[in-house]
Image (cartoon, rainbow, N blue to C red; front, side):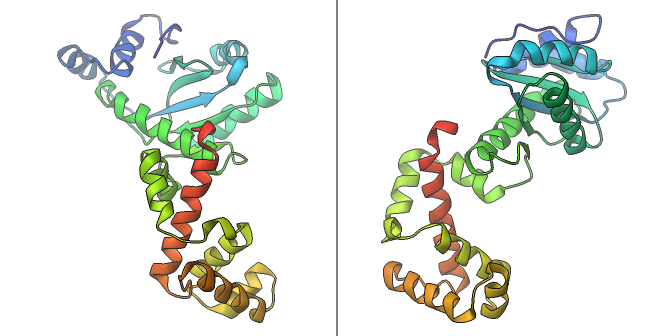
Length: 250
């Protein structure tokens, strides 16, 4: 990771400490001293903002937007790390996105960490924000803002090595014959506690049509998605397949 930008405060102590943490080579004694200096230890959130080739434009606007005790740096090419004290991270992320897209014409996708209070916790926050961003880009690119506590099943899928995902997918036969319609059917049944009539209404189809799909899926895969364990197995297989198809986004 390359750190090239300065923080918003008058001195460099936080940005240099952040560089140490993000490079996975922290000086623990020095970080303890820095943590001790932060008397209020206010809640902060690390945002990873995917800006692509418009990183420089985003930087110019961030300089004017961020308040004291906020800082930013280049996390990876095209991705900025932004640390902000806030009690409402998702709301703040929405404000960042709206401002950059409307005023700077910079499309952004944002991964949000859980709150952290000390610089020594920054490495964990960075991992959380990166996981949220990777998962969101893979499964929910249209949503643009992703919290670490969201999409937990998808996060677990993305965290698996690709060869493991391939092996797990191979345990469900006939996946090549299934489509998004089948995935929506399994999802609706789980959402509706396997009430076929309610799931059919959610899908805007006749109950008999839904039951036909259930029978078809069982005929192809051997899984009866009216049962929780089989429905979960099929849903996970769909997520694995989608993650492999979208591997370039990870």
